Length: 92
Image (tube, rainbow, N blue to C red; front, side, top):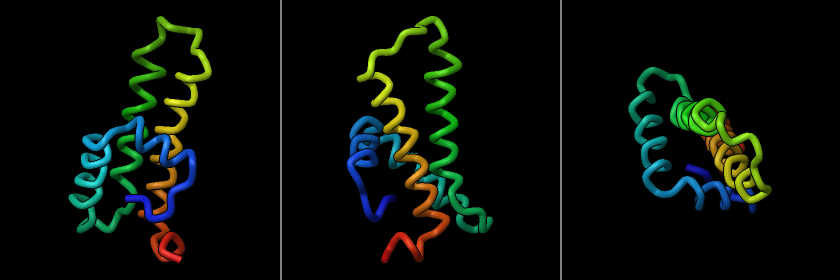
């Protein structure tokens, strides 16, 4: 989904794994006829936020490794959303 990776989007891709990225791409492809771009990455981002900030409320202290893992996933979604919604700039 991302045409030009940087260090953080590559880290996010690694942490998300192939299945999550494939799911976001399927969501994006499914919604293409509606003309609303970026739904795949944004839905995945909502799921990540829900998993870590809503469901993980018992754990208040995160070490830097967990923060980097979660933030890199969110960053990947943001970059993928930019690629989907601004595809002409992403390919240059």
